[in-house]
Image 1 (cartoon, rainbow over the protein chains, first blue to last red):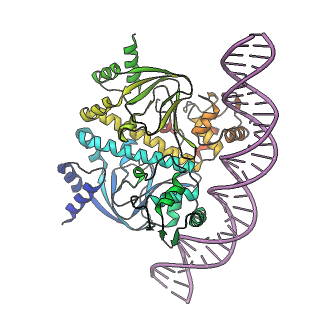
Image 2 (cartoon, rainbow over the protein chains, first blue to last red):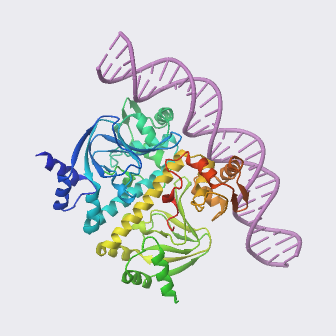
Length: 244
Length: 244
DNA sequence: CGAGGGTTTGAAGTGCATCAAATAGTGTGG
DNA sequence: CCACACTATTTGATGCACTTCAAACCCTCG
């Protein structure tokens, strides 16, 4: 398979473009540029003029904003199959956050104006985009609730649950997808708090932490621990990663 | 003007329907039912099957969810011109939150299936819906940041700023739109915390609180106080109420 | 092996929540 | 127009969760 059809395949696998007609996807693929980024590489910064948006081939990209007094708010940590930067379309073509690789990654960059044209001329895509954003919004909605109602160990527990195959209630091993530092940031807590909260989670639920992998004897016990402080029943399927 | 054309006018003034063609709006207006609700009236509850969505004629409606252990997360407090319940379309026709009047209010109820049909057949509306949800999502995005980065007095200050005419930097009087209790809930803090934080804001910025109206000598000073802990420049126009 | 970042631990401080009670405000019926 | 009932708001005292600062440890990679 050549580079171009690889890109085509990646695009057609993303939620945003799934089921779209091939002429549109081909046009996209033709304008695509593949970028390799080292850890720490900044793809764009908040409020910068936006010309392109991105699809992740592999790796992890942190989306964040910085305040005047130096604090950082992590919007999301995205991975393979996720798109980012496309919502600049709705923000006067300014990026609504900054994007930085937290692992060495490979991303596809695409012109925003193609999306714009498509919204004006392809109702099927517009509808698909609408559903995709609505899903995003729903996910966010739940995150607001989690942040305000769950305590630190529960938030970690909830995060772990979303990494498991939720249909399996029994024993399983979870691999943390990236540094604990970044998980802490994504969950809106300090690295120290994360460390201590994970320890508490260990004594409360009997999970075993070995570096970046975590052994769980009973997934259901985890869900009892986290989901009592949540308005959604487990499995909270809608909050799973966009790519799924 | 008869009831029907009053409804038509209300609809055409909401962000979601602004600029839509009149045949669509007329069809909507014909299926509309006006409801008067007393304070405390519950319009629907979370996860209930959704048949209709709502537009507020006047009053205040609280959107919220409750957790298994009894805590309540306030999603939003909406008012005149706002729509709610329409996102059930993207949630398998289940309401994603509960809705309750916090003041006696008047709302228009409309069948969800009309929206659904329109999305399938009216690209212009679909596009408008897309932009409307994207704006909502953006607003939410900022609220996540605020909740995680600003402290209680800053959050209140930010809330007050959004009630002012942001082009006027000088003296002004702000009227709180609803009970302090509900403002506290919307900002994710306890009533007691709200009271104390407002007092601190008073000593820090020199505002004067008299019941539900607040005198401000210098709007710019308020923005310095709140916006240094925010990644958005003042005036943060995009976070203003949906209706504006 | 040594440097540097990630992670853990300890000690101390801060902010918000909670519980309890006083006070202010509002609407009611008399 | 007043007294009462009820709710909203404020205040005080206390506790807990998370943060902050500091230092140790650990792991990986040149």
